[in-house]
Image 1 (cartoon, helix red, strand yellow):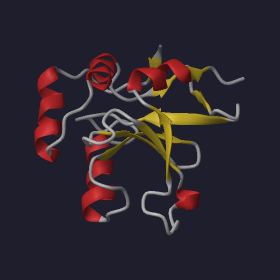
Image 2 (image 1 turned 90 degrees about the vertical axis):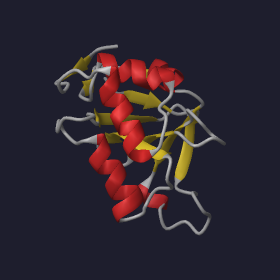
Image 3 (image 1 turned 45 degrees about the vertical axis):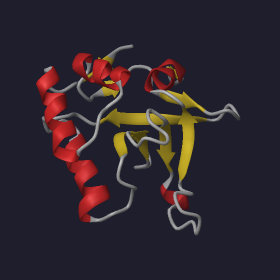
Length: 148
């Protein structure tokens, strides 16, 4: 896996500071990835759905540093300032249409990766706009491929 235009490198304490700020614990694979690549553009930028359609990832958010967008600022905005996502659903990437890829740090679905489709946000069903993609961050990364 290769990422381009990443932000400055993180130290474990940087991730701990984010976890402490929001009262969350990131999964081990997520932390390992962010210690290697802090945000940026993935070379393998397409997620393939079960029906074989694809969604292109625009960028991963950086932590601590500005980058394209800052994970902490996005999480604070969409869960605290203007609640849009449930607490514990952390956006870490965005597609070309502005839809989020999120990781759960909640107990009941810890390390599940969701696609937050803005087209379905007005769904009457609670969290109906969250579509489960994989049951682990590592599996999510393994599913990514290079766009044509």
